[in-house]
Length: 299
Image (cartoon, rainbow, N blue to C red; front, side, top):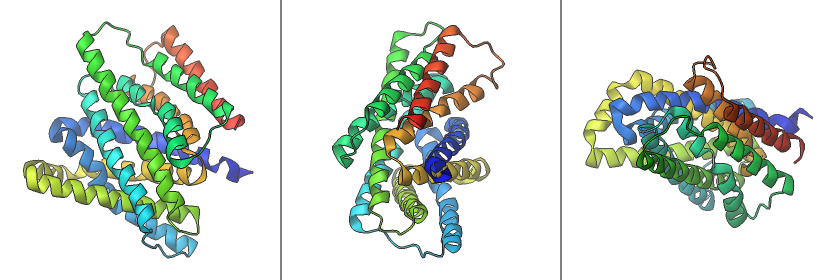
């Protein structure tokens, strides 16, 4: 019985760790720039992902093996899309609040539905479709700006945030494909080996790019190794939980439940809810909770 809910435990854990990682990366953007802050999660996350893989292989008694080429191809698509998504998200955070940007990226589940059908032939049930729509509307209601902002800034942030969500959606579907074709016997090993492969691709490719074009940023990353290490650990931890969830459940359900991250982001953005919550935000929270309940009970 507990096994049926394991993917949900992984997803909520991933959302919590990801909120903390996003907050750390937002702080690092001022010192390292968008590319530098994005690279931190890969460069400093890889060692932790390797440690996770070693520990889990010892516990399970299964030796990690290099995934086949078609699995690596899925993983490469996911890795590239995830890098682009993170960069767009951090760029958007330079112009708007942490909460609003996170909310824009959470239009992702709608696109996950489409990409999963096109690339994985995973047809969602009517309940899943309804849950995705209801929860996404709730997130958008929660993120509706209370103050008037310049139109150009709003359009720019919307484009960056939604573009980030689209790339996160593509990465989720591609990672699901990589995990499913990894060839590992246990789902934990399938998720963990795919994660290490993805982070290795990202760390090596971006490090090479910085060596060739922006060595100063790479030096700055190494100088800020302490906060970068924390962001890397949180990033690896969040990714580990996401990949475990993808190994057990379709990405549309995982990403819809993952919308609970917006509640965590609100806590971070509003100092643990010390500010008053508006009626529109209350409506958004209610719709988000309703969508989550649909996902958990109506699959």
